[in-house]
Amino acid sequence: MSKILHIILFSTLLISQTIKGGSISDGLDLAEIKVAEHKDYIRVVFYVNFWEGHSRPNTPADTTGGYKFVLSDDKKNIMVELLGFRSASIKNIVTIDSIKSFKRLTGEKYADDSSLFYNIELTNPSSSIKAFTLENPSRVIIDIY
Image (cartoon, rainbow, N blue to C red; front, top):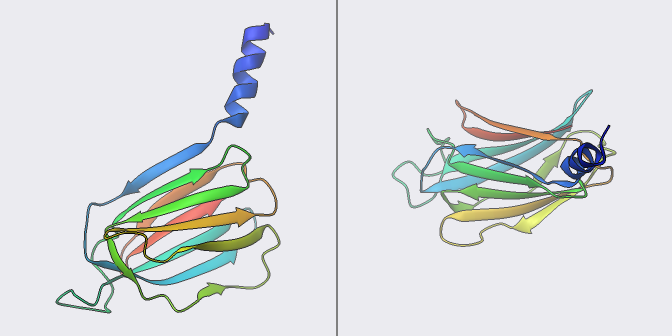
């Protein structure tokens, strides 16, 4: 292979991965976070409720809000931004079983008037991430491979 092709292939391994999605919304509350390890990936689930100022407070929202996940260049951190959230009533983070490659999930529960920011630290580098939303109840999900 040519030297240029080697440089291109190597540089793609160092580029961070960014995933954006969800829906535009406002007045959401982060009610719960669950973390579980599956055979080939770790799943982090963010449960979405309406916030206390909504006409239906503390009930599952009918929208998920937006999200942005950024896997760092070294593949050991994932920056999480949840959009459309007015609060985070989350009491604790539920970790199911022992997850060896998951170090910790930390962050500001309420960063500004419409966003929440978290950081996921991994003990082993991740190869990739995938994200999506589910409804009934509304959830934002990230799978870490």
